Structure formats: structure tokens, C-alpha cells
Image (tube, rainbow, N blue to C red; front, top):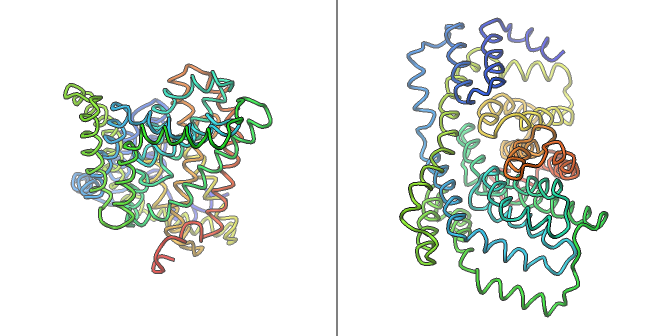
Amino acid sequence: MLWQQLNQTVELGWDFYLPVIMFVGLIAMAVPVWAAIGAAAITMLIMSGDLPLSAVGESLFTGIDAFALTAVPLFILTGDVLVRTGLSRKFLDVAEALTCWTKGGFGSATVLVCGMFAAISGSDAAGAAAVGRMTINRLVESGYPRPYACALVAAGACTGILIPPSIAYIIIGLVLGISASTLFLAALIPGLAILVSILVTNIIMNRLYSYESGGNMSMGEWSANLLKSLKSGWYAFIVPGIIFYGIFSGRLTPTEAGATAVVVTIIMGFILKTLKLSDFPAMLVSSAKVNGVILPIIAFSAPLAEALAIMGVPQGFVTAVTGLTDDPAMLILLMIGILIAAGCVMETTPNIVILAPILKPLADNIGMNEIQFCIMMITALGVGFITPPLGLNLFVVSGITGESILKIAARAVPFVLTMLIVVLLIAYVPAISTTLLPDIYK
């Protein structure tokens, strides 16, 4: 019915349908997403004749000609350096010391270190791989079933795009013309709420099934253990401290904070003698590969967005949807459903560049704050990363452990449900996203 409404509103023809079919077919054949988007955009422009092909080249470069995008490779490189210098293990030691007093302590420590890693790398897949290699075997040794341990890491790694600074917020800010620093500030409470929901879920599951023993430590033993861990690893927190203080105090832009974090992390690696000059080629190549996936998608999304806008698809979508129902609560549920489904099958970047310009007018139509919309969108996409059976993080942890996707997916269901509750709260309670913002954004 929605499709019929959209057809009646925009009068879509084969200049729309064929590129869409091509895009879906190329994705199904495992063609890189940027190539599929580019092919669909160029085909749409040729068939519609709405925009000369000579404008495509200009659109490709103007789409990525933004200073804010420089922060993306910097945060990716910071995360890579963090792992290679061993500083990420210091986060785990401190997180374990914080939670060792309670039953299920190492499971909680795993979730916390996912959040700590997220506050530096801004990437969920990188967090799932890095934290998974450090913790999954130890989680199994502590008494957790391997599929559950994998699901726990996959859920915790979702915070990679939810806790600022996040690459996803940089990209959606660029697409919709919103300051990344403002989005970082707005995402702080929602990101921590997701982290807490995963922690609580793990504690409840541990209580129900007694996966992990422990929790018999006295207050004196706990404080002594925590002080010992902080004494041996306090310097690891210099990096997230610089990022958070620099961005939230307004002294550094996200790009400047990323550059500073890279330099500081490298210097610390040399001081600790855990980093050598010979490590740099591998680090740079690894970071370039990740960045090389993100930037072409953003570049090719520009002509696609222009073609869709000229054809009136975003406006037509709003008219079609509101023709079915004008209840804001139902429209919000529809948007959340679309975002979670999209998060199941594609990475964050293509979802943002394709869906944000289409769904944003609908959010505006029901009076949703644009900052709240961005936070809701990224959080819902994050839930999609562990939603069975196609969540991206499920594949990442399956790849590093060899565990069955279906077994991991089954254990991920409780985390999906509790994270979904947080998404609904973000969608229906604007204050969660806007409390920390200046009055001008509320």
C-alpha cells in the first residue's frame, strides 16, 4: 500500500525502478556498496535526464570536500594504534578491576571495555574484532557458553557508533548539515544508556543461568585491586581524556581531537616501547583500507541524493506515508522498523547517506527535533548490527571465532530487546537527546 501511495504521489517510472533493482542485484552479488551506489546513481541520471553526467564528477569531489571528514581516518588510525601499542589491554585491566566485586564481573568488564574502545575508535566492527580477540576465550574460561560470549561482545561493540566520538555522527552531520560536535554532545546520554542496557542484560542473564561465579571480594580487596590497576594503566586514559575534553570543552574540533589523539597514542607507544617504526606501514595500510570503504560511499551518494531529490522521492515518501496515517507515534515506529531492517543488511555509512535525506523530511513533518532524529537513527541502526540473522557484528565475531552465526544470533536476542527499549525512549522522549544541548537546539 505504501508503494502504491508513493507511485501515485511521485509517478515513478523505470528511471527509478531499474536503478533500484540494479542496486539490490549488485549488493546480492557482493559487489562493493560504493560501486553499487555509483552504478545506480549514474543509471538513474542517464535514464531520467534530469542532471547532466558532466555534473557527476563535480558531485563526487564536492561530496567529500569537507574538513570534518578528515576526522574519520584519524579516529580509525587512533583505534589501530591503540591495539598495536597494547593500550587497549590496559582498558580491560581497569574495567575488570572495576567489576570484579560482582558476580558476572568479567562479562561486565567486557561490555565496559567495548564502551572505552568506542570512545576512541568510533567504529563498531573494529571494536568487535579488537575486544573479541582479547575477551571471548577468557569469557568461555569464566563459564560463559561460547555463543553467548560472542553475542555479548557483538552487543557491546554496537556502542562503537553510539558513544561519541563516532564516525557515524560525523557522516550524518555532513549529510544533513549539522555540527558533529553538537551531535557528539547529544549522543552522550543515549550512548551511555545503551551501554547500561547491555550491562544490565548481562547481569540478569548471569543471575538466571549462573554463567560466571565470583562476587565474593571484600570492599578492601576491591579497592586495592582497582588502585593497582589504575596505577599500572592510568596513562591509557590520557587518549580518551584528550578527545572528550577537547571536543566537549570546545577547544578542539573533532578533526583536531582525532589528530591530537593519533600523535599522543604514537608517542606513548614509543615511550612504552610497544611500537616500532616498522609497524607504521601495516597500521597505515589497515586504516587506509577501512577509510577506503567509507569515502567512496559518501562520494557516490552525492549524485544519487541529487537524482532522488530532483525526482521528488523524499517529498513523495513523506506524502505517501502521511497518507496512510498521520499519527506521529506510528510514523516513528515505522521509521525505527526501516532503520533496524536496514542496519541488518548494510553498514552504517550507506544507510546514512541513502536513508537520512529520505527520512529527515518525515521527521520534520511530525515535528521531531533534528538532533533527536539523528540520535534515533544512529541508535536504531546500531540495534540492527546485532539483530538476527544478518547483523554485521554477528558476522564479525563469527569470523574471528568460527562460531555459528545462528547460535550467536539466538543468544543476541535479549540484548536486541533491551537496546530496542532504549531506542523507543530516545524516539519518544526528546529530553534524552537534548538535555545537554544549549537552548538553541531544543
